[in-house]
Length: 418
Image 1 (cartoon, rainbow, N blue to C red):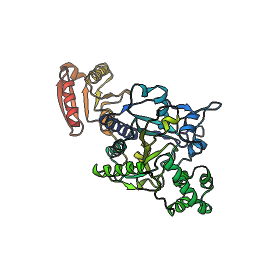
Image 2 (cartoon, rainbow, N blue to C red):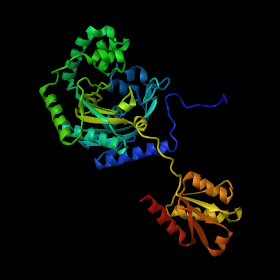
Image 3 (cartoon, one colour):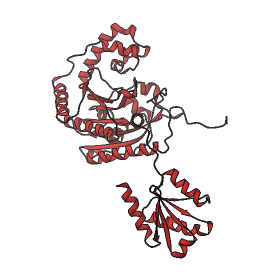
Image 4 (tube, rainbow, N blue to C red):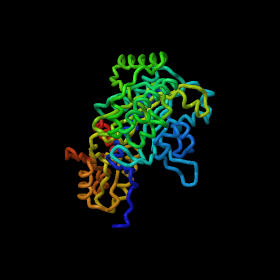
């Protein structure tokens, strides 16, 4: 037993019914993206590490100690999707033939974090990026899409927290205000945050350690937004209220990535504990320019699929198929297999026993697996050119001609799903 292999710490296996729930969340999200006019981008898991150092920031936790690097190469497993989409947007010159675009993505992200509930080394994001506009109406759309995806998954009680960091000049002013106030409280901060006061004061606001949160909670931050950024933010808040989207204004909310400007938001749930964010996002008006592209506004979000799964009840076991084709002996197995293929050609989800079980054992298997219908073929049925269709839920059965039974089964299985 000591030779058994185990999954890498901080990663997860998804098997039925959890994998079904995972896929349902993704399918519903893609449907919502389609309604709002977002197109899918499929991007590699590997990127140059310089992309994230330039995009996210040299002194963020992600770039300093969380990226998984390929040995001997300046290549990393992607830790997030926004900088990657910006790279693709620039490299493929999308801006030269489309002045506005909306993309979505799904897939694995990787960070070398200390694994704990809600925080993994490989995790899955559902995200979106809208590039080419500074409109606060676009901010509202992105927030609405994120909230709809969470609601479509069946998650209740999610809270939208929102703030504005303002433009680059406003962020510099905010950083100075934070540095000034927290320098007086440096003894209360963790070692990392004492360094951050000098290198990146905004990161102190994002620290999850209780001692740092206590120190941050007492500081006062007012009047750092310029007139334009103030108007943008308050127009957005008014629009969200008109749309019926509830929010909580959090004046100390920042994000752990340096590219954010203006609107920032988190969607949280108290049921997740200290790692309470289901997802987050915001505006990043300078990122694309900083990576060598045009000076163009953009806004986006990412939702953590594992975080969403933690908030959903354990899904019920569902049958792997709608029909089991059962046989009475090896003599009729070939005929049973032909019946199986006919059903599948009709689009009916069907399975068969490959282990030569008795008919009684096959019926028991169907009952245990929750398969609602069994098509039985035996010597007598072959002579009469018919099959027996058994309804396992109601314990009733009927005969059907070989030529008619696929249509009958299709109607029965479709009817049971309506």
